[in-house]
Image (tube, rainbow over all chains, first blue to last red):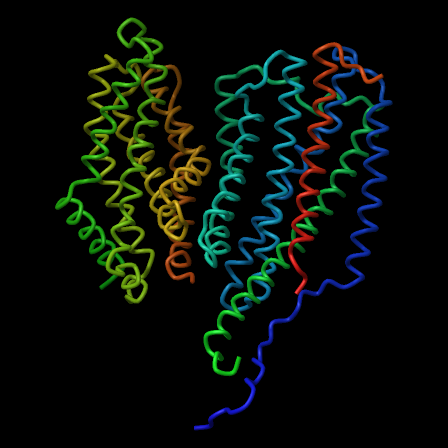
Length: 261
Length: 226
Length: 40
């Protein structure tokens, strides 16, 4: 048996510091600048697009409502893939699993942001255009469901105890991803069996050529914005994971090496 | 022992424990009775038979849903005492057998409650189903399994959280919404005789297959994951 | 200058404001959290 005297030897799996190189920070900055330009141009396009026949200026809400609703269906997929990867990699590749979990929480949070905006703009538009805040038609009900699912995901994450968070959340993420298509189909069947008034004759069905460019610019703007905040939230989560690791290591080292401290 | 023996062993244990204490079933029965009475204050069942038939399906399932929360929250709580859960983890039995045994036991308890609740509903709301009533014997078990299967799984998941009684309904309801829609639509169409419930019965069946498979596959991860 | 008299006009303004407040507010929260979390 060898007794180690003198200073504690460094652990062989030293925790690597977060790679936050200059390159990625400046890339983020450039992307942010570009996003702001596209967003400004999109806003300009939205304001100068010709007035709509029935709704007048109110329809311009669509230029911001539509990108958010469309994009809020992309982030849940990221969450699903990330949750599955976490489950697969948890034992075999813990470092990659941690990255997967960071993507999962980032994409879930962005989903909640985008779907909240989609719901809010939709309700404001609906109230002004058709006199009602809400209708239980297929599209709106499914959308509300999407919002509820990912809000419940975020609540599970905040209620979970310490190191369990990633694990329980990944399971819920998989279930939520399975649930979304089932929800969509069953709600669609519900509403076609007993047809109810459909809001607005279908968004996107009557886009005039003159308005198409404004729609596309705003979709691009909010897609770029979504990528920006997704990446930032991911980086923030990685920093937090790193801080947690450091705290755990310090606690362990404090217990074991107290006579050498 | 084969897989079925494990499931049966867990199932028998759950039923035995519940029979001795009977707290889950009593709690559920009383709760559903209260719900029936409170809902009856919201509308007048005797004077409006058509409306009563249209909404009774929804009321029944809301009552079952909230009652089963009771049973589900308790069912895992008893595993936390005396490190029983750790014993489960160490045992060589397949973890999904534990889940299945418990889910089947909860299914039995909730179905027992429904056997009491359904006649109470019929009596207090003067329900006279206009559709094929025997189909209810198909819809009730399918719907109950959808709630109880996922519920048992998520109750196990919420063991690892603080404030688990609050969290279980929060995560269970959004996931169960398509099943709830299907079971309420099926029950309502049987009661009102308006449309065929077959579409919804198929939806429930498909939902149960998909989610029970997911639960069985992921339960080992939930139990062992540390 | 910004039309605000009818319900339609008000809701248009609210809708755009809601989008900006939610999105830039979230980004602001991210920025605050980013400052608070040390790098290593």
